[in-house]
Length: 259
Image 1 (cartoon, rainbow, N blue to C red):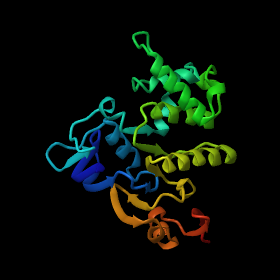
Image 2: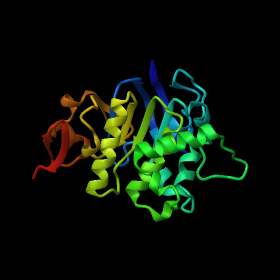
Image 3: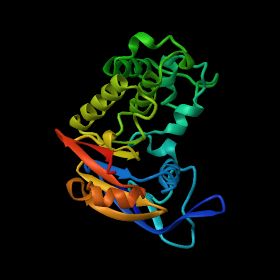
């Protein structure tokens, strides 16, 4: 089954056309990284998946789990999204445990009309225990580190136990220890059967388990294939318009300046 099916779609951000005639398919179980520089269209693609924007109605189609019409509420049990924008915009006064619970309503923060049953509260506790953040559940979002915030937002996405996750620049702003810890969580989720879609411009965020890489530049898919074939100095030099050479160890890649 395909999680995402985009066929010959034109996609706009406001009045600006970001993608023209875009086609892209991602199947369940295919661990994938979308790699590209700033301005490539990565943020627009995330907004498309979350339902914040739609493809132009006159051409092509966009399907999520086989559906052309959806909202995040409807697909939250199948797809969890953790974006850089979500971390930036999340209500700073909300306590950690409430961040997790907000996933049941796909809300940013909690509101008076929202109620939670015992099963939902138990699920929230289970998720916090798995992510190692239960001890922080009474701390306010603004009082914890960026890495801890990222774990709580991941937990917010996991409360429905979705089969697929979309992670936007998952280690941006994290120090080395927090970066390694978060990537270890990502690898554990893949081992547990989750389909992972990473959207990034950082090679070090792509774990060894990712087998497919899509190179995105100025609103176009310029290459799509096996990681070993696409992560080369020549291709990345062209993608980022700067001389790049690669270092590789244990299935991980890192970009280095080639001058």
